[in-house]
Amino acid sequence: MEIIKTDILVIGGGGAGMRAALAAREKGAEVLLVSKTPMGKSTCTYLSAGAFTLAVGGLSTEAHLALTLQTGKGVNVNELVEILVNETPERVRELEQFGLVGEWQKGRYRCLGRPTAAGAPLANILAETAMKQGVSSLPWVIVTELVTESGKIVGAVGFDFRKGKAIAFLSKAVILASGGGGALYLRHDNPVRATGDGYALAFHAGCPLRDMEFVQFIPVGLAEPGKPALLIAPPLADMGRITNSLGEDILKKYQITEKPVAVRSRDSFSLAIFKEEMEGREVFIDLRSLSEKDWLQNSLVRAQRDMLMKYLAGSVKPLRIYPMCHFFMGGVSTDQDGRTGVVGLYAAGETVGGLHGANRMGGNALSETQVFGYRAGKTAGAWVIEQDWAKGAHDLLNGRLNSFQKKWVPSAADLPPRLIRKKIGEILWREGGILREESGLSSALGALKRMKQEDLPRAKTESPKEILEKMEVENALLVAEMVLQSALMREESRGVHFRKDFPHPDDQKWKGNIFLRKRGEGMKLEFRPLPKIIS
Ligand SMILES: Cc1cc2nc3c(=O)[nH]c(=O)nc-3n(C[C@H](O)[C@H](O)[C@H](O)COP(=O)(O)OP(=O)(O)OC[C@H]3O[C@@H](n4cnc5c(N)ncnc54)[C@H](O)[C@@H]3O)c2cc1C
Image (tube, rainbow, N blue to C red; front, side):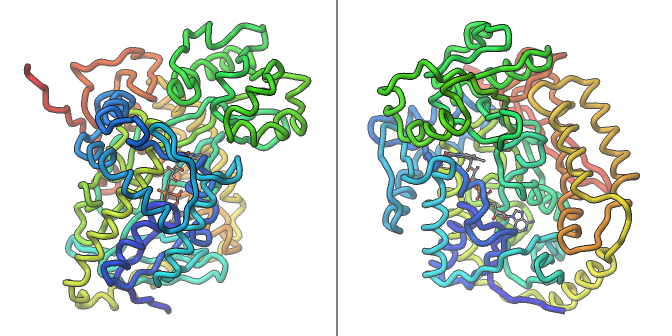
């Protein structure tokens, strides 16, 4: 059985993982980055629109701070927001030193790249720089367990799903940068493997998680029958007409005024479309009246013109739209340098919760990957240099590998795991998505419990791919429960969390955060109010 030794194991090859790996290398640590796909590829970072929000070109740090807190509806961790607004410009300038090319605008840096994957140059530059700096990488590996002893990390266990073999990693520190869980929802714009594994890994390792009820949806997802669900360039929502099948103007009907509507009004716009669909009316974007000048206004818009107007026939008919799950605000609770509470375990990027509060401002996620990836990597890199290897760690990891092999035996049971995942996606979409209420959340939790008892044991694991899918499904059931339980607890509406039965914010009772952690075989939730400011 293989045990690979490295000072630092980074889990995740997106923006946060690669930035953390680089910063740890700069401190002289030996770094191995493992991920489910090759470093940088098929990550949210790669698929992103490549836009950073930052205090440049006339946007002050004070304004960036205020907008972030306003979007987060007052339940962000202020200290993390302050760090973000102060440090993003330096981190982005560093990216340019690595070789990234982009446009500087007021409050924005936009990578120059292809329209539907404008983040590709960012992901590629980080991967190239990491390789040049001596970061080792191992793709096609899903990490399934963080191994700890006496509250301290000693490594991890994973599965190489191309070779079908288990691997253990012996390390002094682990940096968890495994992204979010957007792909758990039926409709989403995330890469397919964004299944929230990191939340489950941290939970089992004993870390507290926070804010898991806050899941962001993006309103303008293409929903043309038979065509891929892709993100329509957000500025087009302001330029075209958004109507329902009765011809009503949706923005007027729901009084959605804050522009750009697909960015600043993401939550109310998504909710409006969802309500229309629930009441049996489809929603469309009509781009037929756009002028030549409109199409040339913005590089993202320009780049989508042929696809929307020619390939999808947007020049002769309105195009159907429907929201898509986009981003998880919640995640592992950390300090400003990514420390998690388990000694030697750090986390960064979308896996972490707290920065964004109840809703995320557009462009702050990529900034988060660079600022907090760098901080976690630098801190872990400096820390491991002073650490000795844990005694008895080899035996412990061998024991975990043995347990792994007993658990993950090939089985010809009758249920393909991808069908279980689809069912979870449907449940989350219907009951734990844009519009929630007590009855739906409770019945969804009941359905998950039954799936755990009845469907999971029937999951087929004949091939390594099916083993991978079953591993993801196990995590998905747990992460879905975190979202639903937290959403059920918060009896108010705030940010992206809309409760039909509690349609207004309630600062008296709910201005604060929901934390959760493992208790025995279950999870324990706790609401912590923010300290009241007495003026
Ligand atoms: C379509 C789209 C457009 C976006 N546009 C923007 C934008 O313009 N600006 C902005 O600020 N934000 C944007 N976002 C959000 C932003 O892209 C993400 O929040 C950010 O890139 C997350 O980076 P990350 O490094 O945390 O995770 P990711 O980039 O998603 O990387 C996660 C990595 O973890 C690996 N992994 C996961 N689980 C495991 C496991 N168990 N074992 C091993 N490896 C694992 C994956 O393989 C992957 O390599 C967008 C998101 C999407 C989906």
